[in-house]
Length: 179
Length: 287
Image 1 (tube, rainbow over the protein chains, first blue to last red):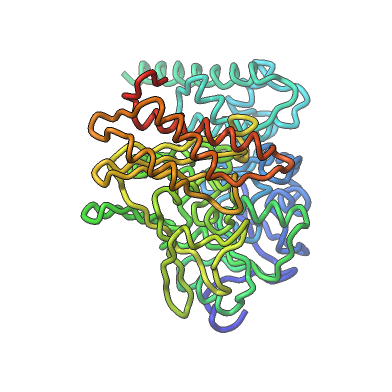
Image 2 (cartoon, chains in turn green, blue; image 1 turned 120 degrees about the vertical axis):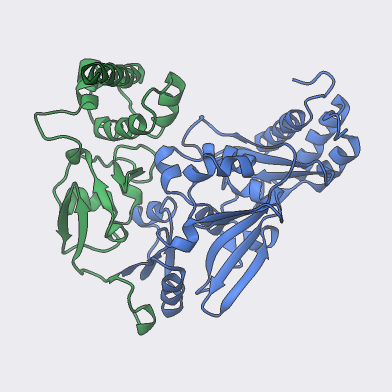
């Protein structure tokens, strides 16, 4: 890069760069800067929860949040995500203490082979954060970027609706306690 | 290979001037597919989707125009307040990919990739959008119809960046319709945008995925203008039939792995008729 780009952070070949993942700064070293975020998460940072299948944004199994937006990790150039807040499935809840969405997927039988599950959990959290009481149509549309070849989606929709209902009743009982 | 993350337009243009062969990265939904698959090599990437100037939009009520920055995403186009200013663009945006794709993919990327199947592009064609370009050497505006010269080929010069588009805010129906193999996450087999300007007494029809670039259907447009009752919002059934046929004649489809030319032409006839009936629901015997 010439002086014309002074002040612009440029990441060169094999240069170390830092990503902010699940609340921690993680250095990425010995990596080609053309690698996708999905590849860097799995192969450089050891975060295997995000799954790689199509690597062209079709299947959603690599879904992550970047600055609170749900995106496909395979379509993010990792080195371009410097300075952004990245949340992966590992950042949703600690092992052994599942989030309400994760528990609902287990309870509803929405997990079969499990490959699509991390992406669907990410997409469901994003959906319910934005729209706490989605219609079935809205659930189907909002999860349309996450392909599941086992369940036929019925139990996944059931799981999403269970979380919506339980969050509503939790909120109602919390306000009763408050009053 | 180097990656530069630009935060201001000046940063982006300086980086592109320093490395005119650099590849511009916006939402990544086209470029990353090519990089992941090893179908593309590049020495330098300039990421522009965090450039403030490109992330903004501006409605000018006096001029009745809407300026949309190149890095505005499809998710933003599909939602209010932008959806009311450009209803057909919002409809097209809703058909793009999935929520994950719409959160990343940008209107500028759609214009720059210049795929004949780009979902936003028939809308920009029907609305006679202006494409704004900038480089360190200066700025220029290009009519949308002049921007793409072929499939994935454009008049964009090395060092030049798409900064945004401007479209008119029209008074009248506008809609986008698309045929694909499923409802989500699908590339258009054929698509069409119809936009009516009631005060201007014009009907615009643009066709996607049926030619090397987005096509307009001037014969169909003239036929609709002659036959339509703009005040009553009505048009007779014979004119609707003729409109569909003229739209089909304007298409220049090919056979490829996604569909046949014959199916695509037929789809255009149906989509064009359907959109015209939606625009003029007073059609005798309409849907």
